[in-house]
Length: 580
Ligand SMILES: Nc1ncnc2c1ncn2[C@@H]1O[C@H](COP(=O)(O)OP(=O)(O)OC[C@H]2O[C@@H]([n+]3cccc(C(=O)O)c3)[C@H](O)[C@@H]2O)[C@@H](O)[C@H]1O
Ligand SMILES: Nc1ncnc2c1ncn2[C@@H]1O[C@H](COP(=O)(O)OP(=O)(O)OP(=O)(O)O)[C@@H](O)[C@H]1O
Ligand SMILES: NC(=O)CC[C@H](N)C(=O)O
Image (cartoon, rainbow, N blue to C red; front, side, top):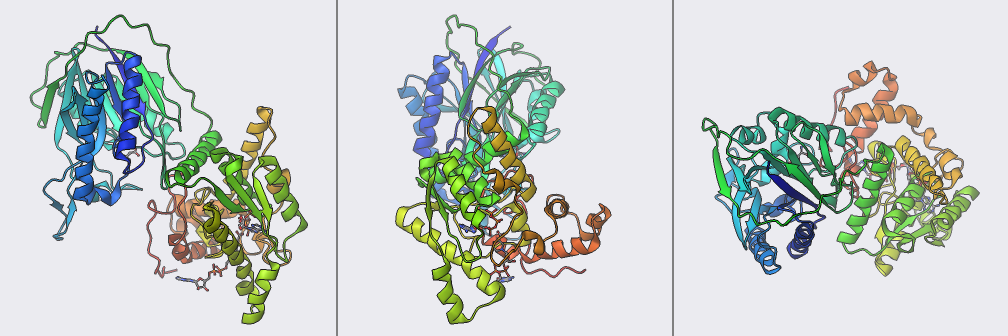
């Protein structure tokens, strides 16, 4: 039985950095060669970065990508790796524009492609058929669907290649190409992290393997790209659907696995309507290869996965956008504490700057808890009182009530942005998903900032993650990073004397329940009430959610960890008068 040694390169590209991304692929090829691999595959658009959004409609960008594909092939050859076939994802074009509907405007001139490189040239190419256009994806807008199937033969083994969404469609190109005859299905992916997505993705891969009785190799990207975090978690399952290799989440990795495959030459079913391109690659003589140790990473538990996603999302946003450090206000409360702990895990304590900015209403514990947090984290820390700065504005404009309260939050934003301007820090805004949902933040105040680490984390989950992070540290004999008092005290914005969040909002247990129904499940008011929530509360909360859409549109991005994050996942009108 032929054996194929397959390498899957879980790389972390930056959109547009064609030279840097190509260098990662050459490095993966070098390591794949050292490990004796016959074939290397990297992720969807691993050469251009992903998603490329409307860059796909720019002929100049596509021309650069085409150059980069050619250059990658010759660089591999020049590095003495030319005989190793490398499957790489990239946008391909420009093609004749595909116009949509009645519009004459060209909307798509590119395809989402996989090229097979060998001996300094492109030996075969496949274009993705199914272009996801739901959730955060807009691929139908920017790509032209492919309609050919591709099978490459290597050392007597037929390998079918498809791209990401192609795998998800029942009866789609993955099934059809296997019907047409192939012994291995190779899928290159750009599949972003969502909580529990691994519980869907791996079973899908296993199902496709069982349905077709062929091994399936699934290689994903890793890394943060704007609001998306690609978790890697590349997997290989055998023809019975058994997991035989798994790369770690949230880290670059080269997964190498030996597959025993049925020899090619089985009947090709010519009744398959699609055009199947078959390309024979050159196989190289392989000397005896030492047996590979199994490489099956353990998946961490749910909270650890979420934490790691938030950490990588922030680290890559800062790193890929050229920020050496971050700054945030430390209020002694739970949200800023969790953001600071994420930042410290992401960048190291020396690159995190916390600022306590007490006002006239700040409690003693807001200072002491912030002091303790900074001490526990070991991050940079300063205290900048704001009362003398707020007072003249209040006096001059004769402000009272919320107008006066919001000046405090806005003054803090001025100080943080000023320090950012002076020292180049990225400003973190600490709002959680619950606050964003109901608009419980001051626009241009605490909502100001360049990145929002916990914007997709509901308040109850913020507490849960804080407790988890402390327990994780304690289990490793480390000092828990978050002060106990920041976790246990009642949350307050401290914009007026003795204020607590529950003066304005329902208890978080109720609020997060209603918001989950309203946002994640997108239920209407009567359906939420039918779940057992009080009607008045439901009306109050959903009205706040509708009214806060304008604030959310102006808000900073942050890592998506749920199946329904604010931003591209959930697009609603701002001007909206629901009939109650
Ligand atoms: N549809 C719309 N399109 C465009 N602009 C719109 C608008 N609706 C209001 N506005 C503008 O927005 C202003 C009101 O918004 P904004 O100034 O933010 O103020 P507002 O939402 O009225 O008040 C802020 C709320 O957030 C709470 N807060 C503040 C700070 C921190 C925290 C915390 O716990 O983290 C909570 C605070 O206690 C208060 O309840 C209006 O004066 C108007 O200028
Ligand atoms: N006294 C303060 N010093 C520094 N920053 C502050 C202070 N008060 C508020 N902030 C900043 O504004 C954000 C909003 O905080 P606020 O206390 O109003 O409500 P919160 O959402 O409960 O946040 P937290 O749980 O961090 O207190 C804080 O996370 C922090 O970044
Ligand atoms: N890039 C894609 O085609 C991604 C779509 C796919 N369903 C996923 O998230 O895994």
